[in-house]
Amino acid sequence: MKKKIFSIFLMLLVTVSLVSCGILGSKKTFTARGLTIELTSEFHEQDSMIGDMYLQATKYGFISNSESKSMVGNHTLERYTELVLANTQSGAVEEIKEYSDDNVTFYYSKYYASVDGTDFGYFLVTYMTDKYYYTTNYFTKREDLDKHYDKFLKWAKTVVIDESMR
Image 1 (cartoon, helix red, strand yellow):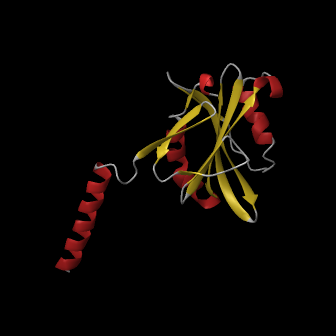
Image 2 (cartoon, one colour):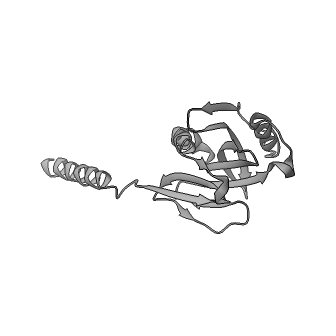
């Protein structure tokens, strides 16, 4: 019994040491087409033809895309978010919410869809600049979306958009 307690204590000590040194859960910044986001080092860039940026981790992923206002029309950000969600064709969309502070304003919502027979939960976030709309999707297994919701919202708050980097 003492050996088991000591082993557990030792594992906790090593984990705390690794976290404090930044080895586990260290922050990592990604940038593409004017959008910069701070996630964790568990994310890795993937080749994709479906967005500006596609990042994958073991339990979740991230996709961003941008659209010129001249191509899709000059809408309010809330209206643009409604249009994006209408195009998901999932039929399972939750209420659209707004977040705003001194650094960033965005709209967000959850929705669900199946891809190749697998059910996914999506955390959609939309941003707007003078010339572009930016759409980001965090995704995970449907049953895990609520578990990761606060983490996705925290990451959404780290987004910085700089049109000069397009």
